[in-house]
Amino acid sequence: MKLTQSKTKDLMATITVDVKAVDYTENVDKVLKNYRKTAEVPGFRKGKTPMGIINKKYRTGVVVEEVNKLIQDELYKHITTEKVRVLGSPMPIDETDIDWNNSEDFTFKYEVGIAPDFDVKITQKDKLNYYTIKADEKLVNNYCNDIAKRFGKMSSPDLSEESDLIFCIIKQLDVEGNVMQEGISNEATVSMDYISDKKIRKQFIGVRTGDSFNVNVMKGFKNHHDLAAMLNVTHDQLHDLTSDEFHFEVKTISRLIPAELNNELFDKVYGVGVVKDKKQFKAKVKDESEAQFLVESDKMLKNDVVNYFIKKLKLKMPDEFLKRWLVQTSKQPITMEMLESEYDMYSKSLQWQLIENKILEMYKIKVTQEDIIEHTKKIIALQMKQYGQPKGDDKQLTDIASNILKKEEERKKVYDQIFDERTLAVYKEEFKITEKTVTYDEFVKLASEK
Image 1 (cartoon, helix red, strand yellow):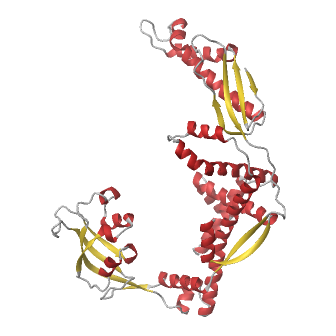
Image 2 (spheres, one colour; image 1 turned 90 degrees about the vertical axis):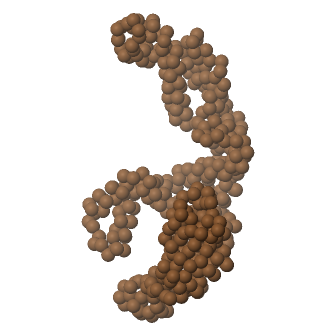
Image 3 (spheres, helix red, strand yellow; image 1 turned 30 degrees about the vertical axis):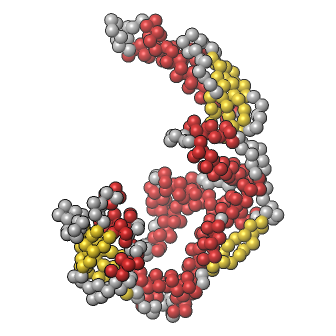
């Protein structure tokens, strides 16, 4: 077998594979002999069918299969040995003229896309901003209120208000306003947050236990996922309703009374005596929220790094090849309209993969099996501490970690965490980073613009 590769032009090349009979005959004969042992042909005992009949019946199909296996193996070896930086996978060029029945020697041609040559070098001339989110007073107060609600108590008021939860018996009505005998019936809690229509929301305010009223649910509840859950029907059933009018009878009213911001609450949240007063409590909440925001700041930096390099390097890609390859290999049919609208995003994603691989190589960033286990052990130990459980010994932690990492999705999650930590450390070290302080609202605006 002989493989030859043409010179790369416009990031594309052709690999020609010449296959001779000697390359595959031994394997084909071996397969056919095994066929003979099990073949059941009328007029012959099992295993005694003449090879001439076996060849006539099966040889062409076996040749096709064995030649294709051989080609795939040799293509992979060629790409690996010659370090051909292919994009996508080799695509066969027109094979309609191959005469499998009458030929012994074959020539196949494959088109390949080639990754562009480029270098990545990060210096202090490469500048990016790092946005640190500071929790303003409004945000801190909102978080304090959320904590107070989390540790609050439920009451049962006589008269409903805007933020109450109202448990109702819900029954479907016919066009004449009567309860449908075979209609939808359910009991569910109605939250004001579910109701999108202002007039209908008012119907649930100022009601008492035993009050009842009619509601057009399709008008009042725009979130159909929540509405389907409230009526206990499927999404399809919701859109096939014979009537949108429902009768709501109030059974109970529940109101969450937030806990007071006092030492009792502070002790529950942070432990006895850790926080002395409301000022310290707010300061603690502010510090914790800002620490949590660092994750979002890091995500934005990573996003900015990606966009910076794609814009700076302007990698040329074998676009025409990649478009044909995407159409040919997609599991779902792709129209040219879909391809044109989504190709730019795909191309940028592929460019970033190439750039990131260069960065990993340059800065020797690796994640080993040992790294994954140790990182998982740290997470487990931290969770044990949070729940007040004694920290296990190293063997216990290793056993728990190994058990968790048997699941591929968990393993990938830990790998990505370590990988992000190490790449971000490189970006923060090598780029010239200017730190900018923004409020959470300003950060959200920036993120949406980006």
